[in-house]
Image (cartoon, rainbow, N blue to C red; front, side, top):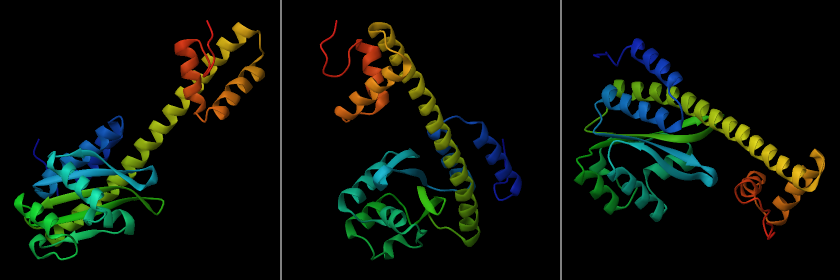
Length: 229
């Protein structure tokens, strides 16, 4: 389907598509593919920021990007990390002229035919939750305007996908705990409150999540550290 990606209609279609996809991986893949067509990028990727501000590549158009990011993580420096730490857009209008980062990193970028790059934090509640990374020949002011609009759409979609996954995990955890409580109630003739207290105590004693203790009991019919039959 041919689309004028500079039009508001294109972004409306993207927003509609992002509402219909399930999960974070599918969401960021849609964002990356849109970026390729909208901005004529050579490469594009989305890097999620996990707990502890740890970057995690979720979608990219080439495996070499993951290698570049790992090099930056290992070195503790690079445009991706700068975008994360400073919660700010990092633009490299002319990669070959860059002096902010190591010559080795710049050489790697130029060897890939990357002459310009931009890293846009995807902000949620004033903090970056991911980074949209775009690489190409050059980015005009119009390209950058489109990239910023895309980043706003992506921010909302990723926040929504993360919230949905959190809610699903919470529902799953409640089901596991309920099933484990049922096993304890039947085996030891406990009431619900006492069965939950047993699970909670084992969770604390073994420094494990409650859902993990419940899952082990369901799988093995044993509590951690108990040689039950």
